[in-house]
Image (tube, rainbow, N blue to C red; front, side, top):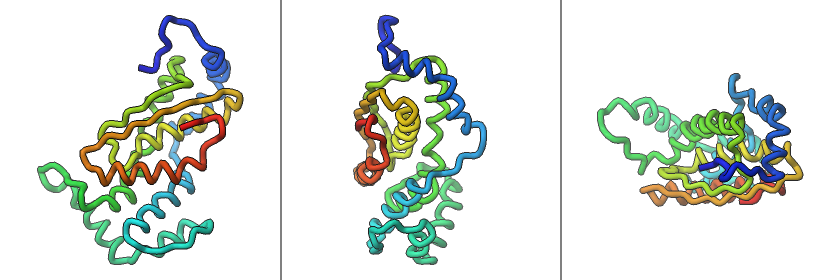
Length: 196
């Protein structure tokens, strides 16, 4: 899906190949522990607070300030829900646990896609124009992980323009709504040469 057709490489693809060593070094963090970016934590907490109907100021809040706005009894309920989520031998219904998913699973799932993308990068299979279809997108963790990967490439290849088209599919329309809101809040973190 990401491979260049016909074997001809565009100038942008040649630039990626020239910077391959630098890019692979940049993504070498995949072999270490990943520190989750603060701006993603902030977006997650803002979405959760909005879902809970809790008002917060739009100023640059510290993560801890936002987290402390969530009542302790809600956090305790989330912990109990997450701890017992897979105790049953039945399909998990995320309908009533979207905030728990955002708080716990979204950060865990965001960077799983980076290993695959790094392999594509090392094999010269990354494109500058791409269409993404995220099937079973949930709140958009894989899409945000994908965009984070391309964001790092776009910062290194400042003269290369990247165009990404995203289609989100999920059986749960609420998850699609949350994913769209997440992406909307996230767009202001992207470099100018990465267009969504």
